[in-house]
Length: 191
Image (cartoon, rainbow, N blue to C red; front, side, top):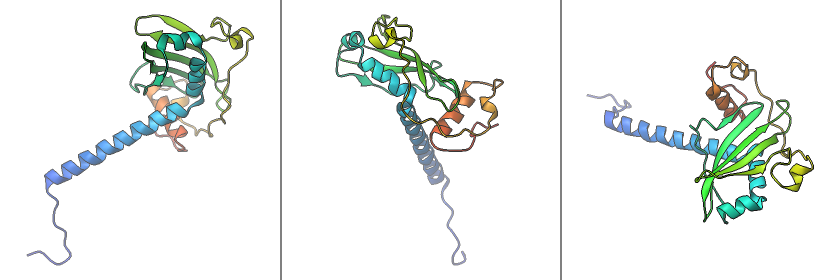
C-alpha cells in the first residue's frame, strides 16, 4: 500500500518520449538562435548590402533575392575573434548560388572590414561583388573606400583557451563566439 503523498513512478516510455521532445525542442531553439546571431552580425549584413547594390550579381540571380540559412556544419563557415569567412546560400528567380564573404578586424573590439565578397553561381560562374583594390568595378572599391560596420563592437570577451593560437580546432572558437554574441559572458567551449 502506498503512503499518502508518495509519487507514482513515471512509465519509462513516457519518460523517453518527454526527454526526446524536450531535447529536440532545445536543439531547434539553439539552431534558430545561432542562425539569428549570424544574420545580425555586421560582416553578414555588410556582404548582403554589397550584393544588393551590385547590378551584375542581381542581373544573374534575378529579383526578388532570397537569402537562405547557413549550413552550420559547412567547413567554409568560420568565425573567430578576428576573422569571419562565410558561405551564404542565395537565390533568385534566374539562378542560385553562394555568396562567399571574407571579413576581418584589426583587434577584438574594432569594427569588421570586408576583405572580399564574391558570388559563385551553381553553374560555376564567379562574380566579384567587393574587393578593396577596385577589382569589382564599383566606385567604392576604385576609390579605396574601406567598407566597415556601423554596428557597435562586440561585448568584452572572457579569457578562454579556445581563442589562443594553440586552440584545438575551429569549432571551439565558433562555439565561444556564438555564445558571446548571444550575450553570455562565460566560456562554453569545454576547456
